[in-house]
Length: 323
Ligand code: NAD
Image (cartoon, rainbow, N blue to C red; front, side, top):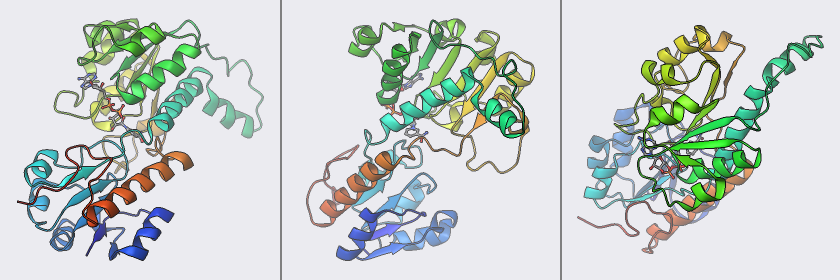
């Protein structure tokens, strides 16, 4: 088998691959670790989004695997050290959806500031509650950006255009960074320094051991009363129980969450009942443009690997290192 697709992925780019290679599409395979393991034993490449957990154990059971195509960004579902050790190319078009996620982040900022979901619901219910829909302006407010990589920087440029003051927390960014200068953003040495100043906090860091539950009871307490929290990165960077408590106590003014600790959430929580919380089903990368760019980049690279050519959108090395 040339290409194993373990999730419900659909794109003209995949259809084109099926014309050239032997492609097995199993939309629910990610749910069944034993079946996934058996299928991987025969696969030359595998295409996943974020539901399939490609663990060390599974990769060890895939002796023919040349490459993994990750349709999206965020490599927390792939055991990268094991892929590296086994010489497997990991493909992820890191740039392909950054603009879409940044735009969604601005959409959440504006929707929270102007109470757009509440206004929509009340107007559709027959109301005309202009006073109840009174919001705040973004101009002049302080936005803390935690994680100043591809997406964080695109958010900064867009938020600066709205006249926001920017503070940044990212342990790997240097004071001379060009986007800091371009946006007039202040780099804070400590996360708490950024959080304490912010009217809005948005997080754009990867999910790692260091960032896991970085937003918790302690860090929410550092934030200003009435501040808004936005997460379009990974659900695991937030302690959801602590966020809920901060919202319920009125300490935080609202939240916009594109991502959750468990996706989809297994049970309904109080988040769903809160007027000042916007919940989205992880749609940051779901624009026509981002999906097209991502699928085309992954399909093209898998095709290249299968024909003995180096990948372009690799995150470790361009060609497989046969053991
Ligand atoms: P990136 O690697 O370009 O940037 C991440 C930044 O986070 C880096 O600058 C890094 O230095 C910084 N960082 C690392 N540890 C940190 C810490 N402890 N505190 C603060 N910053 C830290 O990644 P990106 O492409 O900008 O993606 C950002 C996030 O968005 C990732 O979590 C990714 O998984 C997520 N994402 C979500 C969607 C979606 O659909 N919602 C789509 C794409 C990416």
